[in-house]
Image (cartoon, rainbow, N blue to C red; front, side, top):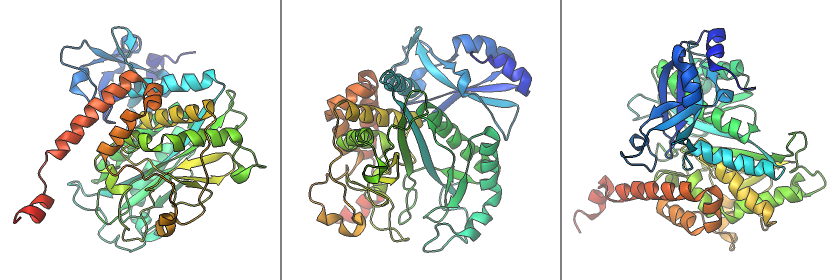
Length: 435
């Protein structure tokens, strides 16, 4: 039964709804709708000019309507008179094929049609920085190895616990919070869920973290590499596949190597097959490639991959299998679009299942010190342009994620790359002024 948002508002004391959608560049767009108007909005959607956001549209396109999905509604724990609800983009009474949440929902339906229910969890890392973005917010957070620093996390107790209290109140089953490997960096974990629910929570989490940080006079950033020499913001994704009832983990086989079933290996095989192409989605910005191709950081390790390899419980590879029935993709970063991240994982994994892809041999070595010994593993793209070219050349993945989406994404991302390439930098001044 579909939730009536007007009744929800009356029951919860909601005055306003934020009808939100995420564009191709992970920009979160919303209209603030008074509760008295939500009945019509639930049926027709809130109107936007698609060209005014990062979608491949022109000013001549008709209105884009974000139709709220009541199953996603969340009352803001820190401002209870407001509720956030994810919208599905429509135009001329048709779903907008390039809209990220629509892309994910279609792939979730494809998986379900094949008897598969993809469940995921994300580890969204972020920095707490000064409002001007120039430095980390805690001047005393200076340790060479700051990971799990109990003094540093307690100095941000008010911010971190307010966010965690919100997740607990929302029923997300939050279970741990820590100071991460970079000075000023944190990670907060909540339970895994079906891929669409994880994407909605991930989207809301980013909004919530930024909002609560601002409330405390700080700024939160999920930028992949905001500071030279410090570990970047990853967004590791834990993946398992279940039957349609959600009762049987089809990846789990305790008699198999690493506890990963044949189906789990095939799904992983799809991830390995398309890894270089995936990077265009999982690592979607110019800055992303400062993280996955970074030199050693102050702490001694980047904690990010640079080659297409997998292993058991070893964090120096692109994929690790930390325990039976799941694996962790360590490629994505903080800039990843919450919906496209899940969509491209499902698309690659389904291809692996359909074609019974083999992930290839695992390498049980420290890739940071012995990676040069692996001769047959492709390197991940060195920059965004290489990733876009890899994605464009991967016809199977482009079709699986959706031809209309792929064309729009590649067009806008190439424009972004060209804007970056034409930008003059201090590095050019420093290195070529006297040539």
